[in-house]
Image 1: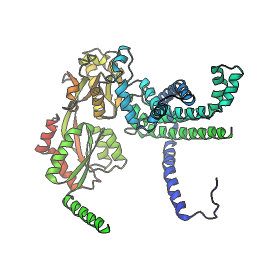
Image 2: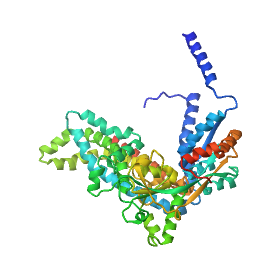
Image 3: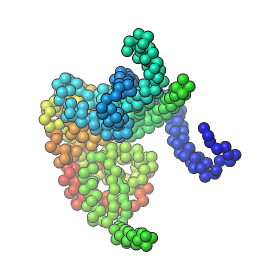
Image 4: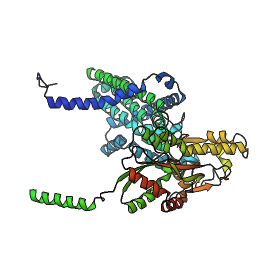
Length: 265
Length: 258
């Protein structure tokens, strides 16, 4: 930090900043103000809200497990090994981060839908994805996993290779090195990546509504429940929105804490 | 350089004056149920050509449009797919009393080339994927009434309605989203309006026979918003919809006389 100390900040930047801060904070305050009203608790205990929370927690939980199991090895390989075309692959794996979620939904339909690329083989195997909670998980995995991949790659790349080599000369096997050295050292990065992935999965809307449909208690996640409640009964929509604001703030705090620890470490 | 710029500006100004609509032309905003998408788009072009106005449409589920209007959305005309999403606005003083302008009926559709659903009774078979509109969407409400009517008749067993509702895999926000799911081949069957089986959708779907004693119909009301900025043009639009020319277009898209 090398900001110039001044007694009076200039007026124009100050005014513009005030406008922006107000713009960013007012909607959040409005959400909390309307959502945490007198009927917050009864509405929270209502079927619509509970079903949405359940669906969201289950599907995002599964998404996180799958992300951890499937993406960690990929991140490790990309961070540790060189091969031709690696740069291209790296870029392609980041694509879902910048792809509009609705486009991701169309892509998933064209791939896993009944008339999609894998539609026939999946049907023969007796697997039906569209309109199922599995489709919700796939939509979340596609749009959110790349966030973890990014963080994990950075984590594995930041580790001092000498430490690993030293452990190896002391007779540790590859798995042991990973378990005892690589994983713990990269953990703050991985945790941050997981939090970001969870936030993105919780907020997933476009791909889900297109690929998984919207059915209460099955595929209607928090965001879809807010969308459908806005068209009939505002109560659940306001309560769920307030819940999301609180969750988002908590996640933000968590990421802050984790990265603060990482910087100190 | 400056002179060139100035000349270009002048030319642009002259062009925009030429292209500008005549002085009495209004920019009209019409909120209409999604099932009216094709018919009103064509009707709007005819109305604009005849009146010189510029009409823009916002198509969505009637319940969504009603919420938007209650939340202060600006529109001149509102056409709903049923009275239930229309009358509350009249009672709230947001909308002039409306009049019915068409009637619509239900149709059951299935993707062409699939055999999961070939008759009405199949809707209750286990494992069938049925897509309906949400219960507060007019077509979703009608679909549930139709299933209840079939169940009460006992034609396919007394629990037909319950079994069919158990097969629902998605509740969509408007009629066109429901039709799309069958058009994509993702659902085994869906209940939509007869008018949703448009020439564009027809090649991809089969219409399942639905006896008229079970079929449900609803009259679409149409009215001018009390806060309309273009009151005269809005009245003219309503008049055009009710006129023989407007009704002819609506008939061509499968709507019936109210």
